[in-house]
Length: 291
Length: 240
Image (cartoon, each protein chain N blue to C red):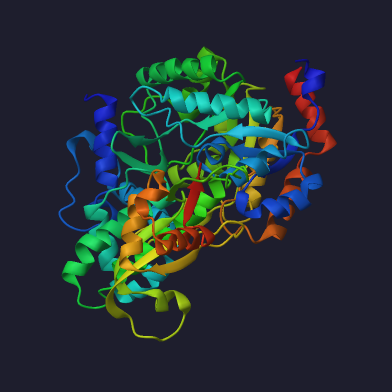
């Protein structure tokens, strides 16, 4: 793809949620893209699937997953992947994204994204799995950075190095979650701009934006930030988005909201705030960066 | 260094333990997790547990309300007895209902009908979920309907108490008496309905998982009338 073509504005939209399906349908013209969670298609009901399939061709749909657990040190669930492939084709999604994380081991499922030790050995095993995903799902595969509460002590690579190594070896793209990045920067005392600077220009294919909450604990001086997808995106998150867009040219920016979905005005406001960060000047800078 | 899977298993085992979730007990951390900040593990465990309990509360809201002041004690005991092994809301709610049936009834004199309330709420959620996922097939009008089966999506709930007042919002006393309920979304409806059945009808429906010849149920007019009545209520399907 040429730098000129990639410098067009990214599509801006929201994650599709069944509980606000009618509202989404009524406001479809306000979004350039909807991100569909493939697990909702796999495990959701027939009415939900039908509602999602009704959107095909009317708005750009991207495919996102939460159930792969690519980081579990065990073989991938190939049956699950084949179902993902089927859904991705039905949605005509341009890409399929998942988290660089694990959620379960045989017999236990935390249903929460957990980090991996960032070592070259672990990267090697993830690289093999990414290749398996790529061989079964017929669209580009993107890996997303997660918000992690804790770190493994034996990590030898930074998060950016870990992601970059896996993506470089496999050709996978990145789904950059700027809220996860902000949360990690706050909770782990890292520099989010250094993380963004370490990513190769043009490697970010999609972006997630969300709003979380601060948790206060009497024994801690600083609040702990949690990625709850329940609040308006913070100014800090949008600043990181703007910073990322200086070097990255994502095709889609998706607002994730999973709680307080009745606050639809906040959702529309956040979409407008995201769009406000996509100035023509940003596009010019991005064009220069890619060129 | 142990294999990564072993460390991941040790991590999930710890994160789903009461020691990690509530900071209770000796809280000895597996040596395979050495070097990980324990306060952070406690936070992770707490977040994950809270998310799980919110999922269950979404399916069993009345049960949680009725637990009242016992809720935190029950949550701790539940976390110890039933670690999460599946992401689905209904699966986790079913784990909680089974836990209440096993533990609550044996240990608590107060609201001994709680497991029955949970069973009904679970059945309501399962009936909604089934209706959401299935379309009622239309039978050809001319087909000769010689067999009968329980309509898929009809949940049978055997209660020790008549807990229907809990769902009807009145102040009626919860009476201890065996109550046989069928829960289903009637054809064409959106919300599930609850019907009380006579014990023999409940037993009959329980045997009709697969199509049975109508003649096998009885040749009497009463048997025929019963089948027609159950079909009209959407509790059985008549099949060719």
